[in-house]
Length: 167
Ligand SMILES: CC(C)(COP(=O)(O)OP(=O)(O)OC[C@H]1O[C@@H](n2cnc3c(N)ncnc32)[C@H](O)[C@@H]1OP(=O)(O)O)[C@@H](O)C(=O)NCCC(=O)NCCS
Image (cartoon, rainbow, N blue to C red):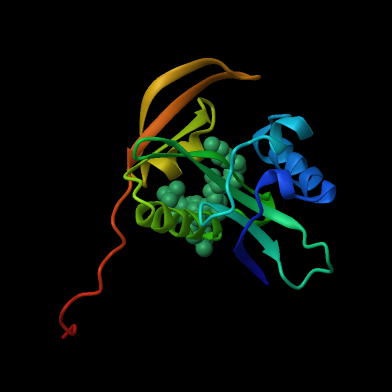
């Protein structure tokens, strides 16, 4: 059974966990990061640091997905990494993480979300566009493999329960 749980700040991850994260990034985004660059990402332990784990697997739990968000500036929160193992994609896990993250970010006072995505990554851009993000600028030299986009959009307040009973 898979579930999203709050993750540790990257500096506190075990060596095995960091290896799994590097492997996940390489497999799912094609980007190769070093252990040091991942360890020094300023991702606090908060509701915007989510790890998808298989809770039935033997310990240490296998990391099957990650959403890492970090305070950026003013009321903007930045998603620094978002990736889900191929076997777990297209089953709603990404949507669920986004909802959990967006709710937490709103409650911490953030009103906008910003991130970078490869220009060739149509699937992820569709996912973000469906959540209100639009391309703001083109990024050259940001990705090893080519052009990227910076996308930004508003965060929405969590939907309120209706003040009346449905008919
Ligand atoms: C982008 C990514 C994080 C999205 O996560 P995901 O778990 O695949 O996303 P979901 O399953 O929640 O939603 C994907 C789409 O499938 C659809 N979907 C949701 N639940 C579904 C289900 N049970 N069965 C089939 N499709 C489903 C959704 O409608 C969604 O469409 P949308 O883009 O119009 O919203 C994931 O695909 C991924 O890791 N991709 C590779 C790495 C990557 O590109 N990361 C982003 C870098 S910026």
